Image (cartoon, rainbow over all chains, first blue to last red; front, top):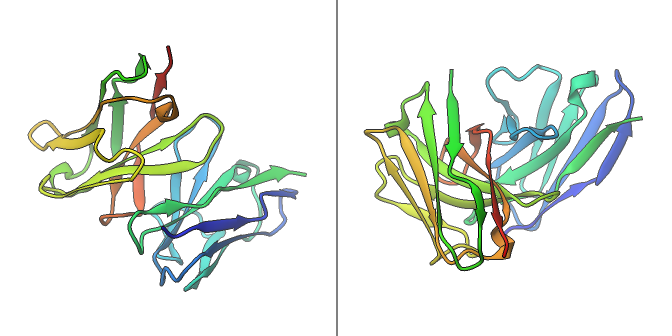
Length: 107
Length: 119
């Protein structure tokens, strides 16, 4: 199974700053990588699919990049509602797998 | 508006059975791949199972294969997960999700239902 490793585990930033989250795959997943946001007590929400495509209703400050084994989620200017846990997920190989998550917290 | 409403969770003893349901609203259920994922308390996300739009193809993670069965009733816009031989490690919030392709992405999620396996 493909292992996805997210870094850092925790990222402490202030509103207005730029956030860069990383996801590395143990083997190539082509561009079949998605990003999700999860807030406490809520279900995950799809942000980005196929590495760089924003899901419906997702603000333009969220962007994704990468291919193969290295991927990045960038939030250009943090809003208070962006502080949450972020997961990456690959659909290239069975079984679909998730990273362990990056917690984005307010500094 | 897409809405997924899970039900059926609760407390069950090890070795017991439970059936989860997920009713779908606001999209063409019969044309959509559907999945179950779970999240143990304080832990990350784990994909559990998926089913094709017709129900003719099903997929399972190794941790549940042979114990869980995914199914759907397109006439009722409802997805099911039959869970047998439950173990303590199956304790989690279970989410149903509308799935764009066989293995993701999961573009809409239900609110989740908590399954607790304990004696």
